[in-house]
Each structure stands twice: as C-alpha cells, then as structure tokens.
Length: 374
Image 1 (spheres, rainbow, N blue to C red):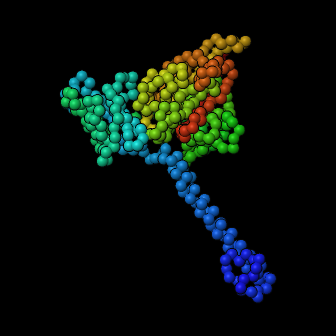
Image 2 (cartoon, one colour):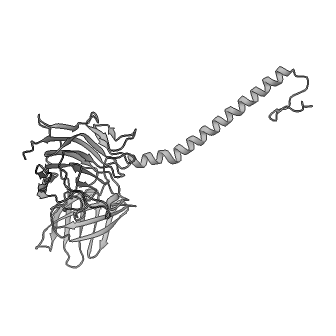
Image 3 (tube, rainbow, N blue to C red):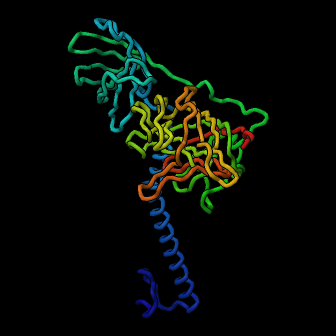
C-alpha cells in the first residue's frame, strides 16, 4: 500500500498521489524534522546555560553581596568580670567558608600586638559558637558574648566599623585623573587583547581575571597617588589567591593588595612593599569595605651616566594610617627565584594595576606629579 523508495517518515501515504504531491509531502516532513532538531538543540543550550553558565556568573556576582554576613568584621568591648590587667578586648571575625569562621581576639584592633588567641567557630542554629582553648562564646544578632573557663572572666562586644578618613578624597586642580568612573582613557592594556577591565555600575573599575594588567598611558617619576579599592568576598580562598592585586609605582615597586584581614601583616600581605618590607601595622579592613592608599613616591636619582646616586623612597598610608615612612626601595618587586629583582629605573614609567585572577575593584584614582630636580 506504500510507494517504494520514498522516505515517508513513518506516515502511511496511499498510492495514486502525483509526483509533485510526493515532493510536497517530503519537504513538509523534512521541515518538521528540522524544527524538532532546532527545539532539541535549543533545549540542550538552555540546559547548559542553566546548569553551568548561570551558576558561574552567580558565583562571581556572589563575591560582592550587599554585606559579608551577620558575623564577619570587627567587634570591640571589654571584659565584664574578673579581668583587670587587660580589660579591653577586640575581635576580628574572618569568613573561611562552609559556615566556618576564624576569630582573632586581641587587646586592641589594628595594632602590632600579640593576639590573645586564634580559634575556629561554627554556625549552629543561627548562632556562631565556639569553645576552644579556654575561650567560649557566641554571636547572635548584634550580641557577642563569652568568656574564659580558667579564671571566670567574661566579655561583651559590639560591632565596630572603621572607615578611612580619605575615602572620597577630591583630586586637586593640578591632579592627573587616572580613573574617575567614566572611562578608561588613561589606561592601556599590558597585552594586546580585545577584552579589558570592566566599568561597573557606580563608576567602579573591576579587574578582569582573564585580562592582563592595566597600565597608564602616561609615565611618571615622583608622584603623590590616591586610590580606593575594595576586596571581594572569597571565604573559600587562602593566601595569595584571596583577593590579590597590587599597585606598582614606576612599573617596578608594588604595594600589595590582598585580603589579609585579621592576619599578622607579613611582607607579602596587604600593605606590604611586596617582598621588601612588611607594613608597620596590618590596616586591611574586612572584605567588601572600601579602603584607601595614599602614597608619596620619590624616584631614584642618577647622574648623567645613569649611575644610581639615591635609592627610590616611598611613604604609604593605608586607610589613613602610616604603614611605611620614607622607606628606601633597594630593588624592584620580584616573583621568580630564577630571575633577580629589577634595578631602580632611571626613566619615567607607568602606574600599573595588577591583574591576579581576582575581581578586585577600584575607584577614585588620581595623582599629582612632582618636578624632579637632579
């Protein structure tokens, strides 16, 4: 009952149809098949987007939530019983992922003091609780209470938010604007790539993990530099993989940017002259808070034969606090044990913002160039 040699796609077609009718039917069936395949391919694409692309985007967006959670940040207070020698106490609560936090108890925050203790706390029933090495306590809402088992001392803390006094500092009339939130005209890419760093809503410059460093088109020697930066929330990362970036003076000397909140403040942590000098004090604020660097940089001095007469010098204020005071820079920043550190440059060079796989954010970047007198 069916015409031999014709692909009917499974539909019974009676004999007696004309040739044109057969071709019309075949075209109709092919069109249906193409439509079905298009729907299947679009469904697969939607599945890939829903299962892989959107979660990745959400993960990146999750690095800048509205806040760092109910526990993260600074807490200050005092012992309410028994403790008389050191009545004041502060705590820095650091997110470590998987509902785990590190708490650093100190006599005073943002000072070179030995911590009372570092311990681990876990979230349980909407509370952050700990009981470790003599210290016990909990955070619930805005209440942070606890004590010590050994001597019966008890403490009560409240939230504390430190803000840099130079946040939003306006550029003077003679300043060179590096980034004011409107364009990237002052920058060039360190590598020739079509992509670049992103200007986010609110005039924020966000580092792009897949793109190289951002260098200024203009080159400088002696400068006063102001910049503001914000660290993403990366509780599952550690060390140099936790919100890493940096600003380079004369393309040679790095002032490190890193989420070093609550850490001791070593020579490779936030505020350090990377691998040269540690900051006098770790002034790194919790992730998501805007921070400032105010830098005075004096380039090296050379004779007419390019012999080095004076080393470069740098003064850095992190969130308004002096962390480096007229420090000599004997060599440039180096990352490789096989390659020696760079010699201080004799020519003007660009300001560099480092890309280091993390979406660190910047805003309000400007500098004042100073005349170099040899």
